[in-house]
Structure formats: C-alpha cells, structure tokens
Image (cartoon, rainbow over all chains, first blue to last red; front, side, top):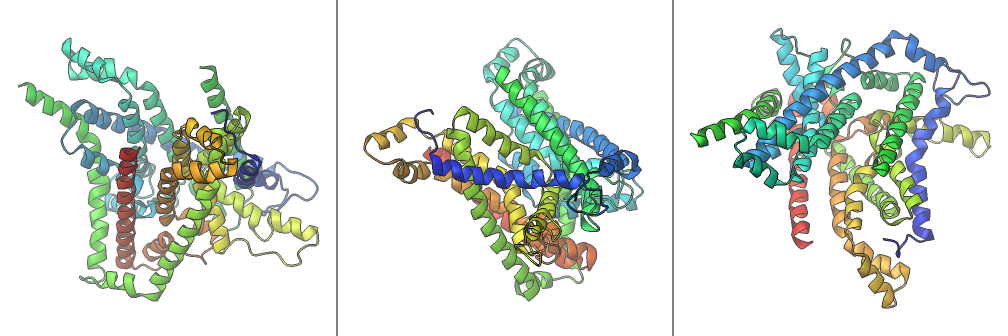
Length: 265
Length: 277
C-alpha cells in the first residue's frame, strides 16, 4: 500500500470533493446563531434563541421524545425479527433461500415512495377497523419503521453469520445440543457485534426516517424529521439549523469514539 | 422424528418475519397494484396514460436526465475521494474517512437544509456574492434542477464510495509496481492499469446510485421547490394532492418494475464480477 500514493492532482480533486461534502454541514452553523426569525446569516450579533426554542417549545421536545421512543421500540423489534429469520436461514439452509431472503429485502430495494403508499394503505385500513395500530398513531409509525429497517438488520446479521465457523456449530450438535442451545449458547455469542450493529443501524434509520413517515402521519404522531420537514416546506424556521448543528455534533462525536475505539483494539 | 423437529425449528425461526412482511407489506402492496388496474374503472387505461401522457412522460424524461447526471457526478466524486481513502497516507485516509462517513450518517433532511442555507436567495453564497458587489440580483440556485442535482449528488457520494473503495482495495500492489517498473508514468499507470482494474466497482457504484436516485423524494421536493418534479414526487402528488389513485399506483408499479430490472442487472453483474475475480 505504501509505494503507490495519490499524486498532487488526485489530492486536489479529493480536496474539492471534501469541500463539497462538508460545505452544507458547515453552512448550518452560522445560520443557527441568527437573531432573526427567518433563515438568514447573522449580521453582527449572535443569538442562541433558536437553541433555547428547542428546549422551551414543547413541539420540538415532544417530537424528540417521540422519535426516541419510536426508534427504541422499532429497532429492538427489527433486530429480533431479523435475528430469528437469519438464524433460521443459517442453521437450516432451507430450500428457496434466495427467494426468502430476496422477499425480506424488498422494502430496502423498492423506492421509499412506493413503500410509503403501501404502508399508508395498510395503516388507514387498520384505522378503519379500529385498531390501536393505525394511521397517525405512534404504534403505526413503529410498525412502518420495523418494515423498512428490518432488511438492513437482516443484511448485517447475515454478513456476520457468514463469518461464523460452521464447525463450532457442528461440534455443539455432535455433543447433543438442542436447536435452542445451539442458537443461544453457540451462535448468538459469536455474532454479538453484528447484532449490536444491526440494532444501531435500525435505530439510526428509524430516527432519521422521513420518506415513509411523511405519508403515514399528520398531526398526532409527529417525529423529529416530520417536524423538520414541516419547518422546511413552509417558512424556513432557523430552529432547524439549531437541531441540525446538534445532530451533526452527535454524529462527529460518535464517529470519533468509534475510530479511536477501533484503533485501540 | 428428527426431520419433523428439524422442520418445526426452521419454521419457528423463519415464520415471524415472513408473516410480518407478508401481512404488513406484501398484501398491501398487491392492494396498491390493484388500484392501478381498477381505479377509476377496470382496465389498463392508467398504464396507457403512463406511457402516452405528455406530463407523465416529461417527468420520466426529467427523472432519467437528473439520475444520469447525478450518477456521473457522484461516481466521479466518489472515485476521487475513495482513491485517497484507500491509497493515501494514514493522515489523508483518516480525513477522507471522516468526510465520507459523517455525511453518510447525517439525515437527508439536515443535508438538504444545509444546501438551502447555502444556495437560497438569502443564503450564504448569494449574500456573500452580493456583499462583495459581484452580483446585483441573487442567482437562482435552488428551486430548479441545479439545486436538485447538487443535493442528490451530495447525498449519494458515500453510497458510491463503498463499492469503489472495495474494488480499489482488491487491486494488487505488485501490478502497479510492475507497470511503473516497465516504464509507465504515474499518470499512465493510473489510467491504463488502476482504473481498468477498478471498473467493477465503478459499474456497481453507478448502478446503485442510479437505482437510489430514481426513487428519490425528499431532496427533489425540498431543493426542487415543486418545479423540478421527479417520478417519486409525481406519485406523491397523484395520491395525496390531486387524488388520482389509479394513476399514482400505475406510476408506482412502473417505477418498481424499472428498479427491479436494474437491481436484477446489478446482482447478475455482481455474480459475474465475483466469478471473474
């Protein structure tokens, strides 16, 4: 890897791309400190009113709490569903494995807008028969998020299972372990990092989900991305800049911890 | 006896997710498909509209044009940064990794909002150019195709980086050294040896970007401002704003078919490049 490094021209192009990638993330920082009620550059004095609004305006606080609740419940469910399914595929190698996995991955491949209409149809039908899970309810959002995030969890867990040595499972079987014991005492301990990654990805995807949530909520179940969307479409509210800065800071911190954790290992 | 408990175990593990997706996704999807053949009246009229109506056609053409443009810009940009991420010095690689992964993890809304803050009439770029006296009137940078292409390219670069970077990692260092040893210049080695060896990553990235871009909704809706409508937004408008469920469903089914064909091509290509590699 060391003898053949990018030359100055390659570094220049990569630098241009880096500027392009970072520009919109940096642009929200000055906007978030504007004293104005509209989207603008602060001229002169800075203000933290939009940050205070996030904690004082119940709409922002409620939507953050709702997104956390939806994210936690849907990511745990998605991980459990993905784990049982992936274990079934790996341990039993059923016929038609490709068809089964392909079916499960559909919500990841189908364009979000089509999934959104599908789930809108489902949830409004469920509302019509008086179900607790329905259109514009938090449980309806949970169900929709499980459906659209579970393929990603399945991919991560299947990849992680692909790296498990089948001989340890054969040994457990030869020693008389039941299916339950093989799964819980042999296989799951070997893929625990994959399971954790699947849970984290499901949570982040649910926390950020807008493409489907937009179609299945209106006034009651307003998640954080839904509220940001409303603020972006109408009058652009600078509080969006403040919440964006906070989200970017969380991401950068998490990345830094991960990179240094990976290095120290 | 053993075989029966074997099948029972497999069924118990596989059933929950398959049942969930069949009930919550498969069946309602068939319901949406049915709309396209039955609303407002039974028949194939809505599909005839999809393939002949000038408005729908113009949206499909615009979508194809934007997706093609975004594919070229995103893959080229991804190649440049992936090259440094894979082959740079440790410091360069760390910087590249941050700049790829931080945008990747940040929500599509935050990123679209960042572009609005930069490109809108009172945004950073316009107010900066005006305060320097370069511009009298603000430049129209959003609410048009330019804004959409910029926002989508930004969103899709990280997705294009991953397949390209994995193809670059698979390149044998010794081949490059051999090219240099036989007298090829650095530039010649890059274009005649390195780029062809990573072609599988480029094609994979292009397919992924194109398929993702086809179904894009959020970024065009925010940065296009209702003027550069793409297919996904057209579906949204037909279902929720001017209710024409049949047409919305027919466009959805057409979109799913196109995406399905491209995805099948991607998988065939992946298998082929695995066999070749």
